[in-house]
Image (cartoon, rainbow, N blue to C red; front, side, top):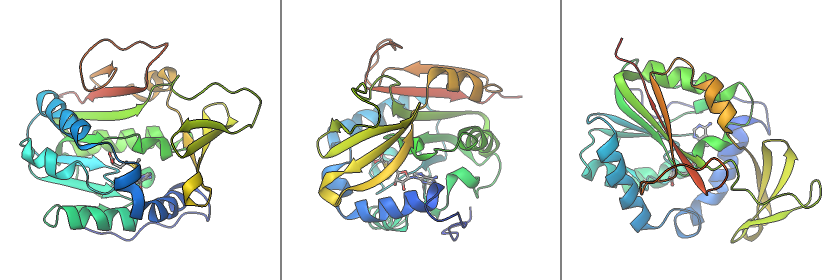
Length: 249
Ligand SMILES: C[S@@+](CC[C@H](N)C(=O)[O-])C[C@H]1O[C@@H](n2cnc3c(N)ncnc32)[C@H](O)[C@@H]1O
């Protein structure tokens, strides 16, 4: 697997280049302020160990490497990470010095060998940063290529109705502690981190209709309400966990 490839160029202020710049600034406080707490991390690792086939696993948008150690301890090997932010990947390197880590923009393709991973996971909403309409289907085609036959993709994304309703067009709403959001257009939100000088980034909310279109060609697709079991309710919830299997053929 190629390691530490240079970041492909992107137009200034667009796509992963601006996402990388955003996370480079968030990195110093990410683990303390924005990462999931350790108990949730271990719940995720246990659930993934039950659901995913054993073998090599790619953590797509691995960020600070929060999941790399727990996934190795859960039995996946090797556990590789890919991220577009050099500073986030630097934290992952420090957390897991032996893990294969790749610096790349996932929206431009995955610089990884075909059929090299049994599982790909993308957690804590990393893929909401793929904001251009063509990005998610292109990435899913790449995930199909990189997965082995029978492999599994697991995405943790916001529930489509988890964002607070819009009171007036374009007005900032409280999203969570220290984070506000405002609608740019249907399905596209701007997030603002008040404590980091009003740093902003844009995110796309994946909807169920998007999933139906984008996951054509996968052998099976399930949506779960989280990592603790239960039935997904399309009308309410905080997250959705999409599990998509590649066929064996
Ligand atoms: C909210 S953090 C989640 C990090 C980690 N998955 C976790 O569970 O803590 C989102 C991560 O996705 C990465 N990311 C966003 N867009 C990306 C892209 N196009 N290619 C690669 N990584 C990306 C960001 O750099 C950031 O580290």
